[in-house]
Image (tube, rainbow, N blue to C red):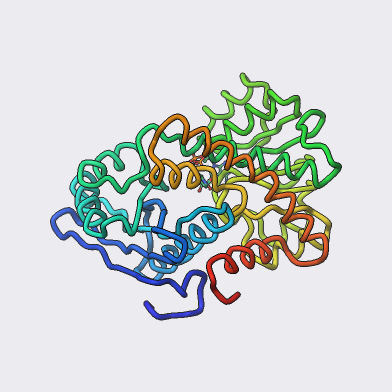
Length: 343
Ligand code: NAD
């Protein structure tokens, strides 16, 4: 399993098993690439049926971080720690043990938030090491800023106009990122539809001037742009063949089920912006504040760098007009910067 070369991220540099019997901690750290600098990536804590699925997820997620950093022009590599979540896990002790482990690595890996790892967990890690996304960073806010930059790039690509005014958007998922994106789109004069499984989020949407759509109706809701900000993998080939939107651009990791679904979108002329390009806002802020200091000036510089996602999106979509899938192009651009052969 460790040397199975078939899946995404299987060409990693190091895979380290992490275990702390006292707390019930079991997981892996994958350092996918440190070619451009230390590996940055969050700690995911989730239920997995077995070791193989945990390792495969860690490899794919670590690779995505390497690619994201490379595409964002950062002097940083990609990694990911993935832990088994289970009822017997002593979270506080587990995350303290993780902090000691990260400290031993001496800066080769810098951790941040992910599914299952929020402010509380990072606080426990921070008690043991400084190689953690700095306090005061705004991961969701910066990710939303990057999505909005990507959406301006989509507008420029479609008709030369980056403005949201007069356009319609369907935001899928009104959590930390989606709610910020949806609010900004409303403020920008757009018509905004949104779905969320959480009734409280829908009530918030109504109060914010957003038009709610039933969760099961998202794939039949007409809009200029679909903005996936929920979980990944919701756009399979069948949905890709009929979703009535002109473009797709959002923060969700891997919103499509893969290349086949992206091909279907391309054949229909639906513009697709890969998540690797668009959802780099948090890691841009994380890398700059870790390497240059968590000052206001550095945070302003991070915002300017996140805004460049607009230009990257435009460039990628222009190249995709010549035929290649945007997802393939993004991977090729990242691999070139990482000095890796295309898979
Ligand atoms: P979140 O958990 O705060 O919000 C997700 C929202 O989606 C929740 O409100 C949830 O109820 C809703 N949801 C889940 N499944 C749904 C479905 N099938 N239909 C409709 N709504 C659904 O997460 P977030 O931090 O806002 O992140 C959103 C996405 O962006 C995730 O895929 C995440 O991995 C990705 N992402 C987030 C960041 C970040 O900085 N937060 C960075 C990069 C990528």
